[in-house]
Image 1 (cartoon, helix red, strand yellow):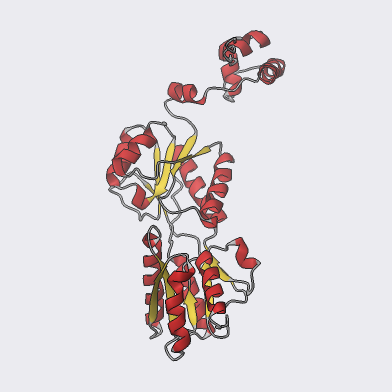
Image 2 (cartoon, helix red, strand yellow; image 1 turned 135 degrees about the horizontal axis):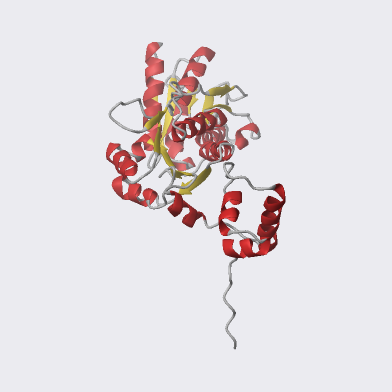
Length: 339
């Protein structure tokens, strides 16, 4: 049995030989240098050689030579992926590409603090964008000392003591919009689903937000701790059916997945949505437009948020004096049958 010959990857020297030019000329053309005069004929020969040989530049080597790449690193959250987070990532990648930057999504959810910052810095990104709780001040300082030019923090407040760029984001705004809608609709007894770990980092603040909105109108909010199972909701729904005088007439369900589950459990218990209980979710989950009753939802405008973040990072890398956005974009409300 003969061993397979090792794969030989074409190099920039191979491209230069094929095109009859120097390696420096190949580098100038592939890096888009405009300060060096190169004829169109030479450019065409080099690009044809790149195509014929299947040459791909070594991004790692280029990063080492330049001291940084054109990548913007975003670490994964410990939270499960959701349509909202996926939408932001997709829009953010497109917005960065339009600004000649490349998005790198970093795994390692179990890492935190300085350990995480070291792992990010090893990849020599031009910028790191993370949620404020993922990147405390000591991590920001470490990244900057490690050569990361820009550190942007989602949801952070402006702080002259840190070198990070704040990108305003209010994850509780969707809950505020949902509670406002239920109260304007005429609901006077509210409840709020509060999923457990790992979602408590978001679900508890959203519950507190609903409580604050309700208190301004003299209303109370029942907290319903649950997870994404029928069994976790059944005891509460059974009690609501047996005690209609204490039953809420409006529920904010944290997100659309929990809202759709709640509607199904209510249906099985003989309670109608929205005539008995109105239900609002968050996230604009696609199934909410399909299942009946169609789900009323609130969601953050991912496309707008991604554009703001990409523009702020590009401006900072270019040493542009344009200030970062001061206010987060307002959430959207889509009113459908469930409320």
